Length: 165
Image (tube, rainbow, N blue to C red; front, top):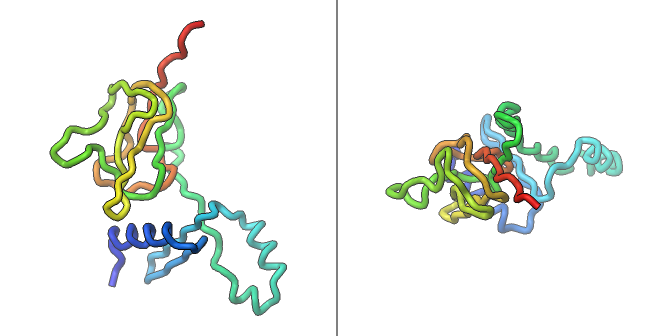
């Protein structure tokens, strides 16, 4: 049985609600590793392993979760002065509140600080994606219904110039 995207989202939701700090799941070629504690460097993991007895080391927790990474092209601003709007969590991106509604933003939309520019769904729970600064949406890097990673750049925004003194 293969894990579906919905299965993965359900696992992530259950993990988030649990008291566990680390989860590693393997099924065939698919490997899912998540951690609530954030990134653990290999050096820290090696120090923990060295402090264990050989029997404890053999039964030790799996390797640390990799830090989510967007592609270098996605991390680099298409031009100087643009700021990223990133995914606050892992989930499915939605550009509009419902399929029949227009998208929250399109390139060229002027937004206020704190404006909702999209939604991320995890197991039928929706969270708004909000801007941290006022400005104009320059580029949208994801499509409606696309699965996104925590910290992935979703939009590039050109911030409003600061007011004159």
